[in-house]
Length: 144
Figure 1 (cartoon, helix red, strand yellow):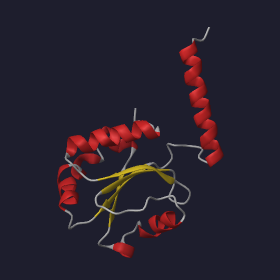
Figure 2 (tube, rainbow, N blue to C red; figure 1 turned 135 degrees about the horizontal axis):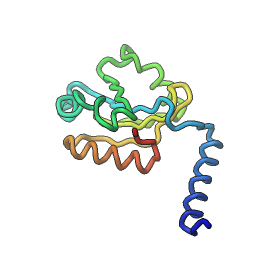
Figure 3 (cartoon, rainbow, N blue to C red; figure 1 turned 30 degrees about the horizontal axis):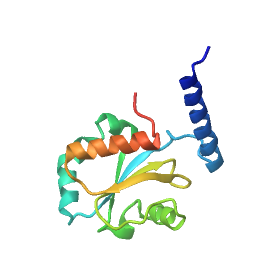
Figure 4 (spheres, helix red, strand yellow; figure 1 turned 30 degrees about the vertical axis):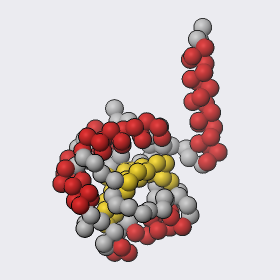
């Protein structure tokens, strides 16, 4: 016999899956990324690049959400410029005002979307705590 909390949990999961299917999202695990909007002149970006960037890809969360850095100083010369610009025009990428901004991206670059983002960097511990919280809220899978 299934308990009431288990039934409630199953209904919640089923509702979420139906909602994702209606949005055309079939797999949250495909090509998920953490995108950093980076300005080399920004002291907070510089601190992140010194404190987190060198070891992020090897971290547990980096295995699930690889980091892609978009350099605002390169503009259209950055290899990510074209797809980020297109996604922004289509409303799949957030409007940006500050650096650094971190964006959890789900799916491929052609059809995927931002599912959450935040701006600012207040140290390594706060970065990882914020990322972990946002990943939990947006239901992006964890690495095993």
